Image 1 (cartoon, rainbow, N blue to C red):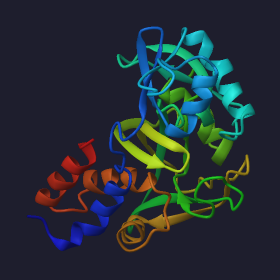
Image 2: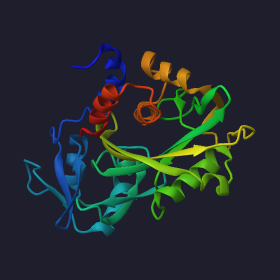
Image 3: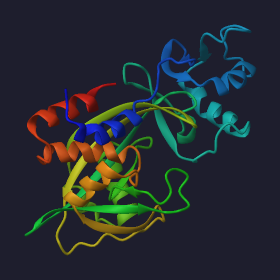
Image 4: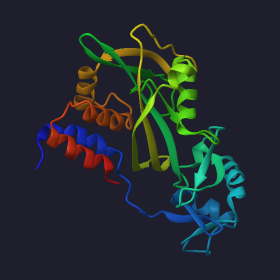
Length: 278
């Protein structure tokens, strides 16, 4: 048994673990290497392109090889099945090896694993620990206006997690590369989530960065409207009492709260098991 006080935190975790697999989706392969689960909304398009295993059941979809993935993404966008991001992400097989690239926006349609980075921007003051939070721009496709991390983003083709973090930190918050490079990895979180855009099978590489008190992040690329420095207790209450924070940011913050001792030992262990469940 766990205390009722954990219910809001567990709700945030469960909201990111909503996918029932396969749940009507079908395996999709490049040659003999499985890399995703196709959403039913793309079955007809994949069949029309000659990638279906049969004419009716759509049990398996197969593209010739990884080189076919990028043009497949273009074709699906041309058919109006998603809005392209014009940013290539690596596609991984079940063994974690890169087999090709595709537009970021196509990943959920094909149920591909995607990776991203999240940065906890921490400031230590005499009266306690503070956290920089970003207010997402109102024109964002996803969760406009909600609270977000100091920097976060997907890992595009050719970048390591740390390289992606340094890139996002500079583009979103004007953090100099030499400062962002001091971030250290603290957690890797995973979830499988059913979303309107398809299946999100996400891996989040989480980092902590302690910032000088006099450092003030500045919005650069329009992703964030403005930044706000908050006591960690205030952020804790926002996670507990509201839905004002972007859905997956809550998971990273819960991990932070566990590591910073904001829960009891028993509650921390319970939440850690919930975070690790997939």
